[in-house]
Image 1 (cartoon, rainbow, N blue to C red):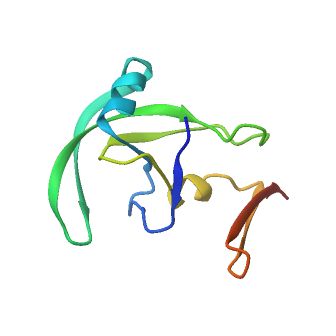
Image 2 (image 1 turned 45 degrees about the horizontal axis):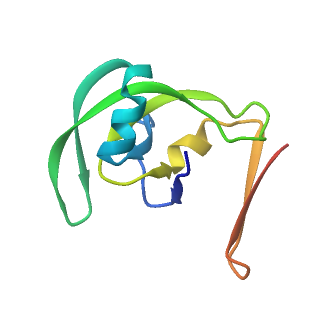
Amino acid sequence: MDLVVDTGFTDDRGAVSVSLDQSSFGTVRQHLTEMQEIRIQGIGIRADFVASGVGSVSLPGLPESEIDTQIVAAGANLLGVCYFHRLPNHRLEWDFERRTMTISER
């Protein structure tokens, strides 16, 4: 599925990398393990408990990008920076002028 890279979506434990809307979460829920409710909080958003589970995430066409990470049902389909922190053999280049991000193997 398509996810928006959200540079503000972080988790201080580095455990959560993906946020999904309710419909998308329902679609992948059967493939998740370690299901639990976790507390999340965002800027300007009150703390709330959301469904979560661990699943496999990768970027199509990018070798060695598959990781197991926590996925939450938090209202939007977002890929957070914690995903990229778990790819030590890759490099992410952010070109502010062109408004592009390029990820590649080191």
